[in-house]
Length: 567
Image: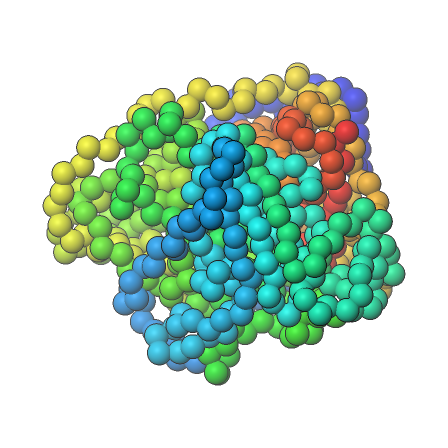
C-alpha cells in the first residue's frame, strides 16, 4: 500500500523551526500548485479533477476551497433559523454493572421523528432516537454494549476514536445480520450479502469476516484519555447512507483528573452533533443512493460521487436550533457528523462581535494548554472541546454559531440566547494535561507515504489510497505493536483521514508548522486540496486488523479505505 517506505526517519523532511514556519499559509497557494502538478493532475482518465468533482482546478486549489461534494436541495418548506429548541440526547442507563463492567443494550430500529416542525421523518436509529443515546463512561472501566439489529439490512458498529480490541472495532465485514437475512457471508460479494456489488471490488471474499445474527456484543476497555467519542454504522459499502439515515450517537469518557480542572460542567456542558441533511417533498431524508433499499447496489448518483451535502444544518437532530444560556462559560463538545460537509465555525454576537472559541481538547482528549480561536475549521468526524464565555453578552442578547464555509441557509448552524446573569465558578486553567504524547520525528522507526486521490475501479469511479481501492482480503500495512511511525499524507481534494486504534499528532502541514487547530492528540486530520500533512503515531494497545480511511463517507464507500495489521 505504501508508495514509499523507509525504515528510518527521513532527516530531510521539513522541520518546524524554519524561519517562515509561523506563517503556515503564507505560501500555501504556491505549494498547492506544485503539488497539483505532481499529484492532482496525475489522476488521469475520465476521472480528472474537474470531471469528477465538478470543481474547477482553480477552485480545488484555492487557499480555502468551499467544499468537496454536491448539495441536495430540500423539497419541503424549511423552518426559519433559531426557533427550535436544542435537544440534548438522552444518556443511556446500563442494564448491569457487575464485575466492574458496565453493560448496555441497544436496539437498532426504524422509527419516525419530528425533525422539521410538523413533519414526520422516517429514520434508522439506535434506541429509537436521533442522535442515538449518549453513553457516559469512566476511564479504565470496561463497557459492553449488546446491539440488536432490527433493521432490514446488516449493520456494523464502530466506536470512533475508541482504543478497542480488533474483535469489537467494527470492521466493515463483521456484520450483524438481521433476522431472516438470507445466507451467510464470509465476505462473499454478489448475492444477498451486505457487501454485494461494489463497483471495482469484484467477487472478493473476506475469509476473516466474523458475522453474527441479530445480536453482537461489543466490548470497549476504555483504557484511554477522557474525551468525546462517537459510534456509528460502518457496514461495508453502505456507511454513508446508514449514517445519513440516523445511525450515529455520542460516547463520553471521563476521569477524575479532568473533572478536577474546574471546566464548565453539568447543564453548562453541551454535546453538539452537527450534521447536514436534505428532505424530500414528503419529509423523508433525501439521499441519492443507487439502491434506496441499501440491500444490493452501493454507491450514489453521478453528481454526488465526491460527497453528499445537505441544505439543512442539524444540531443534535434539530434544524438551526437555539439554546438559552446563563451569562457564564459553557463547554461545547462539538462533533462534525456530516458525511462530507466541512465547516468553519465562529461565534458572533448580533452586533458583529466575535467571541473566542477556546479549545481545551481535540479528538483524543485534553490539550496541554488552551488555544483560543476566532474561527475554527472542522472536517467530518473531527471533534473539538471548546469553552465559550457568554458573560459579556447582555441579557437578551444572542450569539450565532456561523459557518464561514456555508452559503445561504448553510451559513447558520445554531444560536445561543443569554437568558440571565448567574454565578460562574468554572475556569480554564493554563495547564490542562501533562500526558499528551511528546513523540519526536527521531523516535519513528519508519516513514510511509500515502496518496488520497480519485481513480478508477474496474471501469467505474472510485477513490483510492496509494492507487488502490479497498480489498478486505488484502493486507496493506503491517506495523509492530509499540512502534512509532511517521506517515506523510497527500490529497487531491478534501479528505479527512481517520486512523483506527491509534491517536496521532500532526507534525507538519504543507511543509510548515501545524496550524493552531492541529494541536493535541487526534484520530482524524483534514487534508486540504493539494496538501501534504505529516502525522506521527505509536501503534500500541492491541494486535489485530484495523483500518485507516477517508471519513468523507461517500469516499470510503467507494474504495478509500486500507487495512492496517498490528502484529
